[in-house]
Amino acid sequence: MSRFHIQDSRFKIQNLRFKSTQICNYQLSSVNYQLSTMTRFSNSVTNLRSSEIRDLMSLATAPDIISFAGGMPGNELFPLETIDRIYQSLTEKEKQTALQYGPTTGLPSLMESLSGYLEKKGLPVKSNRLIITTGALQAIHILAKAFINPGDPILVETPSFIGALSAFRAYEANLISIPLKEDGMDTEELKKKLNSTLPAPKFLYYTPNFHNPAGIIYSRKVKQEIVVLLKERDIPIIEDDVYNDLYFYEEDLPEMQLIKAEDPKGVDVCYTGSFSKILGPGLRLGWMLVPEEIYRKCELIKQSIDACSPSISQVIADKFIRQGDVYRYTASVRQEYKKRGLAMIEALKASLPDYVSFEKPRGGFYTWLQLPEGSDAAAILKKSIEKGVVFVTGKTFDPDGIQNNFMRVSFCNTDVETIRRGVPLIAEAIKEVCGP
Ligand SMILES: Cc1ncc(COP(=O)(O)O)c(C=O)c1O
Image 1 (tube, rainbow, N blue to C red):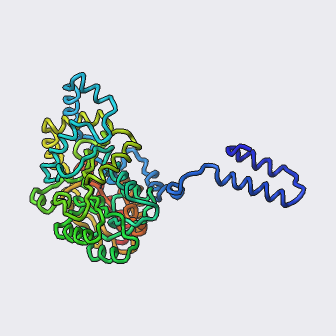
Image 2 (image 1 turned 135 degrees about the vertical axis):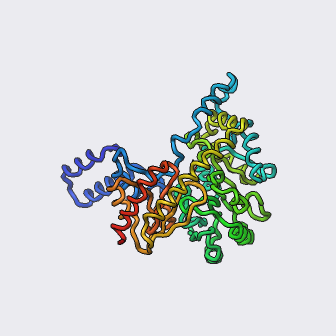
């Protein structure tokens, strides 16, 4: 009996006249077996479910809906003319390279230009190895695959970037969550979790700058405390820094100093970054800067995933750095995101009820609103959708999937006028659900 004909199998069972219940049971259990093993997905995907939020978002179909939900750059901000100019200026040989497979770890020319770019940030490129990846998300996936066996504990922030949480869940990690404060992870909690988690966590994943979703910058003090705690235990750090260039205030640069830049002895730091926010996510280009031993494993893992990242994107990104466009472009989008971020702060201050608090963003894409304990951001989202506005609820970013008294409201993909129009509608929805 073919395993693909459930209807047939049921039909046969219903129409058979069995001589004994034994045969009948045998036949039934054999069909049950075949039904339950019909599509034999892996353990890691069997429990994947469409989230409540995705279901709610499917209601948000109005063509003029205002979206504070996405974490993507504004379409109108992409450097289209620069990309046209770069492509037009490519030689025949460069165009051939762009359409060909390339080395797994990246095209040599981009490796060189990106190294220069990262060195300017004080990153230890010479004493580490660089891999160009298909987005920072792939870098995170590769590192997850390199370290996680099913059930292994790993340390993450609450809240945390949903893409990384999904990657870690895909490798069946046991997520140990550390709450975030306004200057970074609660290191007292980190210490407690380190002392109480056995076996020792495989790594710590954190986002130092303009956190997604919390919007905060880690203080130097918190970063130093993390290093001290992990060094004693030889636990690597994944430092995911895709918003590094999107600071609003130059005076924050010293505070933004990376753990990787100090490359402390006794703790392996895997630094991940991306072209998504400084050029375009459609290129699907990111990178990791890692110690030699980790590099060797990651290279092998990447080989088995995609052989190489898109060569055409790499050729363009290389010129974008070499011709200095990356510096001009990031300087200009920084100004635009700052305008949007400040408009968001102003609109929130003017319309939110007193019981909602938030940290003023100093860069990046996000504001993170805290509602009183027990509030339900999903109910607010439902009301907001009726009013024509969407955002993302807090639970999405909670590794434990519980805390829902937070909302992520992005300002990256909406202009100032739309922010001014949309925020009061969110405030109305909050008041309708939580009170005036
Ligand atoms: C913190 C963080 N890390 C990684 C990524 C993924 O970046 P990429 O587009 O390079 O895969 C994102 C995307 O939003 C992010 O917010």
